[in-house]
Image (tube, rainbow, N blue to C red; front, side, top):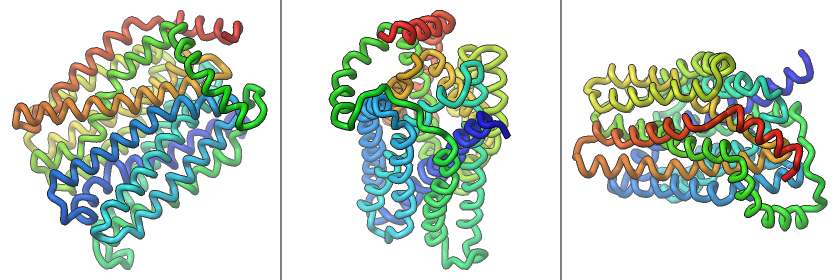
Length: 427
């Protein structure tokens, strides 16, 4: 295996590693187990509020911290070190959920918050490493490989953990509660184990030459205002961030609200777990296909195709009546979810100046996390006004339409040329 190919596979393996947290903890077991085990004594509305509050707090922390940490990583040449530090936080938090007893909902939420910070924080630097391990003409394919492995790895562990909870006696466990706690522990082990290839074989990119953490931090704080001006000086990069802000809000809202949506319209938890498994199974090959389509058609066109699919998905959700409808929508989401995420990362990588990727991807992740605040609010307001959870997702159509209209105005060729000129001029 060539040196570059090993670096690419080691980098992509991290998506296999940390997607277990997104699938098993965030999307799968934590929302249900929190309501039914740790916070069983709380009114349902109170537990929903507490869980939503922690999600919002985590998003706001990442919004504030990501640009600072990204710029600091560029100064110090510490992208990989910061990634591994946040990985350690996430691994310990996920594994520690195993020891949280029934009724200890405050401790469960604190550990969940730490896990969210570890997951989201590590992704800032993971995304930024893309430009250091892949050629520009391979961004789409390599980014898609990461997401594809994420769907496969997260899906495999999720399938095992679903079996664990359905048949706990097969594994020597007393009941489903013990099985779910073991599932959380498995996430920590899985995440740590499959982060090792990146830790071993992906090199730490050089920094910008500033000596010492103190000097780097001072330089980082001074540069943040300048970075905002720099992003504005790259008009197509800035316009893409606005488009991404809109449509990724729709994507993330569907991811975060899917389980709650299914429970609200009367589906059983087993149906929801199966639907999540379908998303993972379909997402693996679909993300690879989207990577090839991005190379052939261009990432922008591929994203627009995915947005069109999401418009149909949201409309379909408003007509959902039976569990089989939920399964069909899960397949549809799996076809486009990984693709839109992978192509967005690849497109922005091409619009980012070399040497400042962590800083720019800090803003990229900041936009994504801040976007996750608006969509759930729109869903909640729509549900309250209409009294029908099936109609609650319809306001998301506006987010996808706004994202598509803004993206149509992005000139990718000019944006890459401006980014290249930025590299040459330095400012």
